[in-house]
Every structure is written in structure tokens, then in C-alpha cells.
Image 1 (spheres, helix red, strand yellow):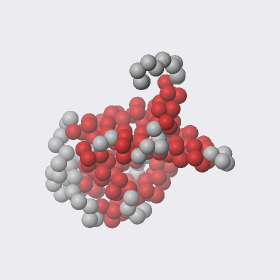
Image 2 (image 1 turned 135 degrees about the vertical axis):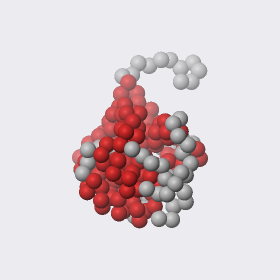
Image 3 (image 1 turned 135 degrees about the horizontal axis):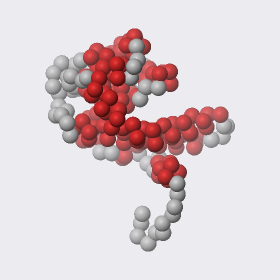
Image 4 (image 1 turned 30 degrees about the horizontal axis):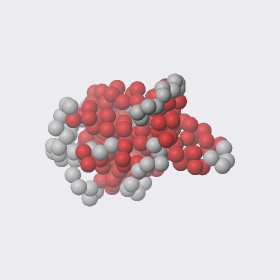
Amino acid sequence: RSAGSSSILVPRRKLILRIMIIGADSTVMAATNTDSNPFWEFSNAVYARTGVARACLVLQEKHGVDVNLLLYALWRGYRGHHISTEDVLAMERTVADWRARVVQPIRVLRQRLRDYPGVEATRELLKQAELRAEQHQQQLMFEAICAEIDVGVDGDVDIDNALTQFARAQNLNPDELAVFGSTVRAAIQGLER
């Protein structure tokens, strides 16, 4: 709020959405300091690789997977950290409120607008707002894990364990992540640890 501004009472959900939309035309990376968040950098690098975005969206739409949580498990495995089912569940608890109150409502609204012609610019703003909300979720996750462990490289890459523990935590059949696992293994080849 700027000096001299008056207070406006806006229901909480509308206020959050307005804040997200108002800032959505700014550069997405400005939402958090990505220099200090290797998890965000890893997520962007992996997500940009061939087939990963589509595979993530299929898991999200078909199984309700929180892609950020999946990327978190992968990042931990990629860094050589042993991750457990409880680690995944603890992180899910950390971000559940933010995801339910901010990320998902923006996503639902953006998806609803598919049915209305002439609102492409609004859908794009919502897409950017959703991305910024997801970036903030990743910042929350990164800060939570930094408070618990050293996030440096700590051993060999272990994507298989990360996917197995994620599947257990999400009550998914590990076979449903098999295609994704192949895609992500190929995607991380050549990434700098």
C-alpha cells in the first residue's frame, strides 16, 4: 500500500487473484530471486526439455499430481539426496494451503476461460499469474528444505528412488510414472549439478 492510500475491503480470494493478475505482466522471474533457488533453476531446465512439460501436464490432469511436488522429489534425487515417502508428505503439508488457496483457484479459472471466445489475453494473464504462484510455491519449498538439510550435491543421482517415494506418497501406481521416468532421465542428461 502506498502512502496516503485508503483501505479497501476486498474478500481474501478476490484480493489474492487481483494481486496476482496485476503483477502478471511483469517478468515471471522477478517473483523470487532465482539466483538463490537452485530448485527453481532445476525445474525450469528440466521442464523445458523435450517431452517433460507434456508428461507433467498429463500427470497433473489425469492423476491430480502437484507438478511442483514431483519436481521437488526429482530435484532431491538429482542432487543425490535420499528422499523418503515422509519427506514428500512433509513437503506436501508445507505447501498444501498455498496450493489450495492460490495456485489451484487460478488454474481452475484459467481453464474455465477456455470455453469463452475473445478472452485469450485474460487467459494469458492468468497463466502468468499461475506460473508466479507456482514459483512462489517452489520458493516456500526451497526455504523449508534449506531449514532442514544442506541442499548441496550429496551423492549419486537417484531418480528411481525419488519417483518411487513420490508415487507412494501420492498413492500412485509406480507404473504410471514409468513413462515419465524415462522422459525425465533423458531430460536430466547433461544438466550441471
